[in-house]
Image 1 (cartoon, rainbow, N blue to C red):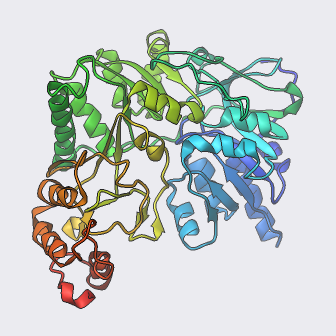
Image 2 (cartoon, one colour):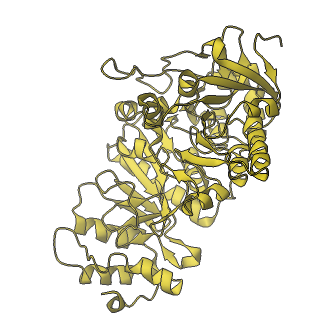
Length: 499
């Protein structure tokens, strides 16, 4: 390919980036993440550190990334600041130790916050593409994330042209960036399949500092095999939605679905796909996983709007090998659009996300273990939960072999308040919290969602809590967490120890 831009090795590109600069990387999950340049940048950081020189950069992405980006840079201790979401174990440790500054934020607002300048100047955009035109037209690869915004805002751009993703992905993206106030107008998306933007990103070709040729698969890992618990959660969700249809609270043609990432999300989608009582559905979501591909192929899912194709290499080859089929059924959007509250509310989306713990008031913690140890981040769950037609959270009723209850008196950290959470699902059952007062919510969560081993001690807590509108005891609210920290098990608590 002949291009009017400098052709660089990944190492040459990394040499252009200086200590203290901020980089906007492509990637929303490992899908479409820059790979070669961040890996080379990590090697540069190691060399600088060995020479006694400081070298750290600020890292902005769409969401989490892969081992060659978050993983390599974290292991080289080359990250000073990170936002908005991550899932790398090394980086997680550095965040929780205070070594890396981390700002957790709703994914839909990240591009806007970058435009408003709250994150400071963006010196570089390092973005993976599957095709480039001489005039500065960029066909992104397997995600959009915030790449379009980063390329527009950055001083300079480095493009990774990845041969692993064919140029035939052209037409699967819909690039649209809202104007900022006071010039902002409505986003004219009225169904999951509507297009409002361009199939390519148009950038100033003078900003392109170089192109790096790569041939690297996305570093998307597989998921665990379904278990009896995840299968039952999935079935409980499907049964509940069928009952909602029969009650007339979900229309007969159904509503678009949003699903989070992970094993439980896969199990829920599998159950919905198998249900003969749920009609073929659309998805308006932020991530498509392997489980969606067969649903599209067999017609159970008729169209999927997403921000990223978070697929295993085999599933991705299936998509690219049948590109004409999937191009008519999948569209990739910027996260600012895939997660936009206006569209979520307009389309009447059913949102399905996962929780770490749920308290008896219906508040959900989806980010912190024992209230202070960050896991990954809030991601896009809040974007959908607050604005969904029906908001659902699911999780196993226990963790650590039963030593931790997911249903607790008081959430040790709160990401989604009782005002946004409508339905809670565990393998034990479903708690429909709509229209219920605090005492009714607590009883439903204990009776329908808590593990039997924990139900009585949760009822004991309710008895001890101060009689008021909220059944809350300030002294006992976190007692089960304290019990786990002291004894390694939340069970068999003696409430009098914590008064």
